[in-house]
Length: 133
Image 1 (cartoon, one colour):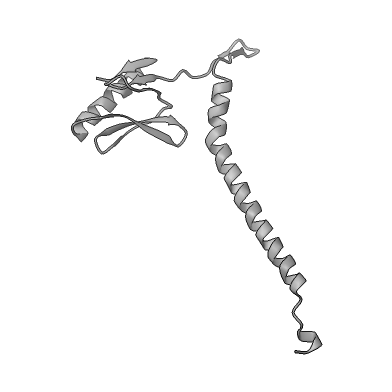
Image 2 (image 1 turned 180 degrees about the horizontal axis):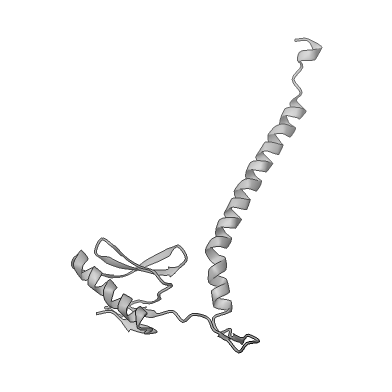
């Protein structure tokens, strides 16, 4: 092996270290971004849940009240963030951005859809607390 063909181990180690650091930095940045996207809206919502203020023109700004939904067996009380869906025979409630929880299982899909429609009608009517049957 000639002088020009010598392998510069330190240069290779430096390059590998730099690449590993970049990969770790990218992974950490992605993980932090995902965590903030999942948690931040919920944290802000809790911080401002009792927050109310009046604009210069007299408009009163209040946080949106969300319906509380009690399961038929009274084992769960969930705050409905806004979404409802059927998954098989289960009624699913959106409890945060990107988070869904089953509140009740019904004998068949039609019964689950009927329960969803009752909850939807209660939300449309402005009901703040609803008990499923």
